[in-house]
Image (cartoon, rainbow, N blue to C red; front, top):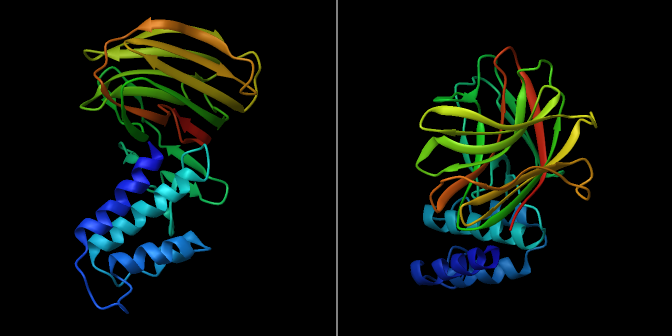
Length: 263
């Protein structure tokens, strides 16, 4: 998937860029040659700020492809702009105001911050959400650092219909429990709830889809997994968004996500 993104972007440069003088750095030939020679991908992106917008866009996409090829984990920050999300993500702020996310490009982590009175249940979609669009079967995994301040504080990993943000399935840490729940037709149903006996701030979540069957599990070391739902039948369309979120009806709380991978 990620190699295809890089190859597609090179094709975009070749097909879309008009021929210009050989000393023009914004030509397709110059971009491809300089990309192959770049030692610092962030600095390389910055060299094209004076080029046409479509060239800048293609350069950023090519840099994203480079990031993806270099790690099994998805990059949260955009190449050349550590304060902006990578183009593989879609950001939904919800009803939160002010600073609602913080990206650490060097560590490849993102911290999502939920204001008071933010939630994700029934028809409520006020919680901040970071989403990755995909289709078909998948296996998604993320590491989360979360210290809930109240039993209503929650954060975790989920999947939802691309065209209906109130139609979702997720696994979260909520207070002192690990909870699997789903929302359909405006009603949230709790599928399974277990005490989070390990008590560690760091926890891994894994969510897989095969056809219409979903398996949701958690682990403290990404080796030994405890499954809360196995082959759970849930009706979602082929086009979905895999997401991470944090919500807090009673007050402000934050969750840090890292080691995100989707196969």
